[in-house]
Image (cartoon, rainbow, N blue to C red; front, side):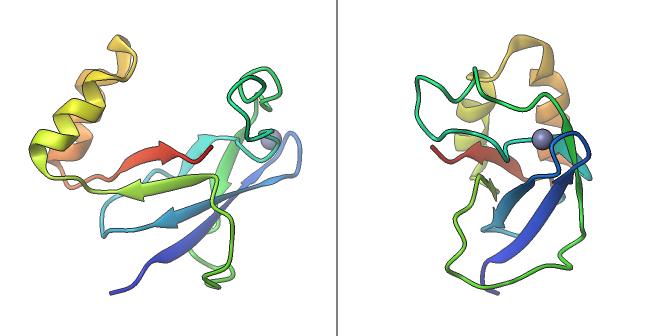
Length: 110
Ligand SMILES: [Zn+2]
């Protein structure tokens, strides 16, 4: 199966966070909005919208030429542990449980 695309719509800024799904896996219904990210390391946090964006459940364009803001992927277990250990301490236990239940991890595209 190829890559799938999903859009997350933000109520605060009206923007769309574009997600690319590289692997099968459970993904969240709501994520932090990335629609207004400036895509540079220096400004990406400062300019971020503080809103949360809701999934359209894949009812969106599936064109392969979209620029993703985030990528959902399912790494091998040892890679997952490495990635989760780089996350803030307060979310690590939840993320590990999420992964063990078949969940995908999220990587931001800069
Ligand atoms: Zn927003």
